[in-house]
Image (cartoon, rainbow over all chains, first blue to last red; front, side, top):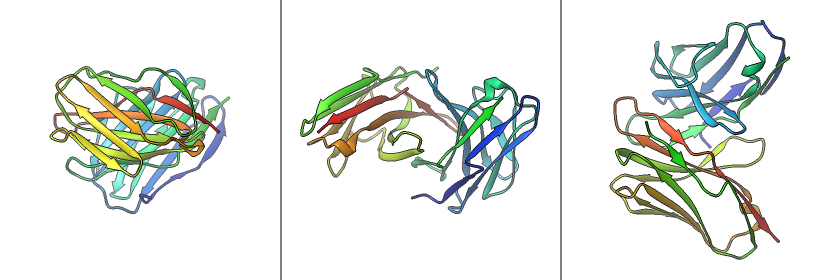
Length: 112
Length: 113
């Protein structure tokens, strides 16, 4: 398995609180991604990174920010969580080129 | 905008049957197509990656084909087993800088003993 970990694995929080999810890789891959998965919508890209300090928006980026200060870590922050952000969040990595994308185990976030 | 469709959304077959899962996409300008498996409550596991220049890829009982011109891919599972029960997703990587995967919504497969 690709060396990807996500923390925390489960989190329950209240509306209006800030939340940060962490993705850590041991593969030294260039690209890192954050997705959310919801019934009826499938997997949707939130933000991605193509290098240290290089990030860009995906299709559902509103309400989320990201940071990548080291190759191995990609952080997803919900500045003020809302109930609509209740979801399962997946991190993924990919090496440069036409290569496979590998996924982490996911974080289940519940916003009450 | 690339769109990926997987029909039907769910499929139930008896053990031992050979089966085909379909995936269609609207834009043929792709780098590659990837098939994933997802077990309930788990992450996605990569099964097969087919580059745009390839016609098929095989891994054990799995065979994936790609017809880029018609916008179709199939995942063939031979001699299905109950352990194959899972959701299967296909995703295409379109051409362009920092290209990203577009996912289908998946097919939930149940293999009955």
